[in-house]
Length: 537
Image (cartoon, rainbow, N blue to C red; front, side, top):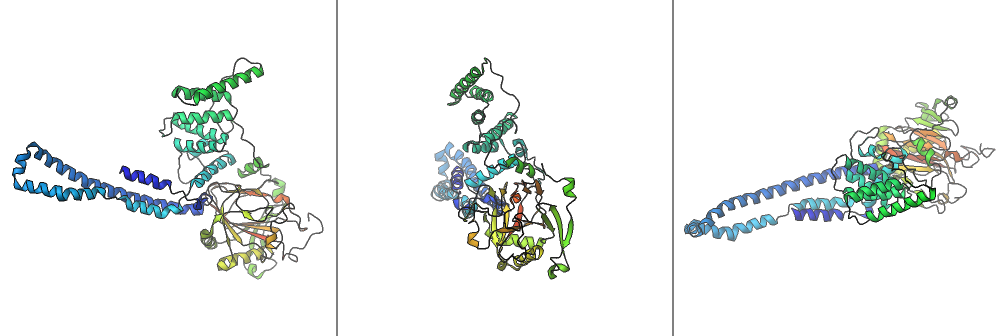
């Protein structure tokens, strides 16, 4: 059994296949892993049953032979005086012990290991685990959720309970620490310590948690608390190789700070638990980060009563388009300027399922177009998987493309293929423009169809929490509603970009978000959307 366990650990450690990275970016693909894991559990149970059956057989042999040898060793000569005992001793040692040896050498793990080998090519790797951990931290920041909310599974809209152990929290904090992200390291190490102090068992030693936590707190500039935590570490592990040196160093730094301030005594360390707002979250590259994340939480929406009064709903027949005369499209205004509309019943449930079925085998990490080269590349600020579908792939795709043309009045002959996207753990697309700006003139040069004049976005799923489309410039939030679609123009009639349309897909907090995009280009729209007389017309 010990040999098998060692073999299993070695085998599992070899399952990190770099070719399978980024599974975490698509919930649709991650669902396959649920069934894979279920099959492996069944295989593991079968192995356990076989191992138990083998041990029962060996135990039966041992019990039988124990009784026999007790009798034989008490009077060897008398025992062997009986010719049958002499014969059976020869038989046992020549035949039956060999059979027992063969039984012991049997390896019931072969079937399980074989099954694991078949599935390991689909296993997530280290990058997937790291990506999923970073996604939790992203959700933590965007929706202002403390570590305990995640640890105890206190999330809005959840149907299944999920808890994080001390060891889980420690691993989260350690990952952040290794990325020099001391802000999140503090939050997760503090949660690990809190759960351990409450009596939860863990493999991780408390000294390790205090070691990482104290140094991370120091990196956040809180010397009094770093000293207090390091003293706790020294108290439980006086021989710790770094604790003593760190404590002296922290105390020297604090003494120097006090002298510089002209003070002789330090204030006691803050004994309040570390919370989200205890330390300031470091700034990053995104200037509208706070506005964007507030909108994702439904805060700061600039929908006034006056603006609301300018929003209407209507039936659209596409200028008496034959395909819309009998069943006009229901249209609702989502925003007045820039004008954003939502179409109801844009996709049926059957069409949605067919599109997802076609897209799933083609899903790959979503890309963005490099503004300098026009080449598609992956980016950390876009976390999802996407697939491109042509009209020739299935009549449903052709029908959807035709419907978009009928509704918008714009030709889709020069539009990009229908892009289907599925967002994974914390899936998002940070604020971006759909059109190319003047400083990136070659973004769509290879397509030869001009700039992206408009965006048609189909929502193919409801989302339990998160996942909104937000426009930070003017404070609009559009929530996903399955079967509906939203539409807006990226360019003014003059061809100039409407910079107000910078938008983002908020991280998915709970649920799986499916969308399909149709980016409509300038070429072919000359008579369908004539040029305006002014730059912003």
